[in-house]
Image (cartoon, rainbow, N blue to C red; front, top):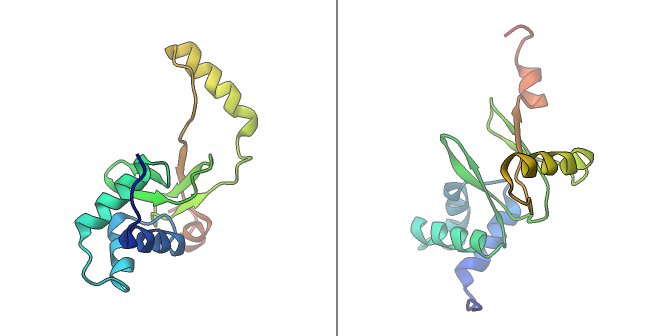
Length: 135
């Protein structure tokens, strides 16, 4: 069933395009600039619907709010454990190993892999530069 047009959803989509892997709260703050009467619940509801309908990716992290990515094509992410920034990889990262990983998962679990979500974590270049060696 197709959803009807929503100006709120359109403004949320525009905010997502301007932000880099935002949380729902960050989307809400951005949307409020153009639509001050919007509620946080409306933003959450629209982001959830958009993720369910495949219009964006929901990235879940332990003990941190979900992030949203309008790039729905298969790619991986790297997360900085210092600043919390999320980075996209290009589609070629790990492409040679993906088949091997899929086969290993299938052999271990019996589940035929159809898609995957990989999030690497570490320290980004900016945080590495800001942290003295040995710390």
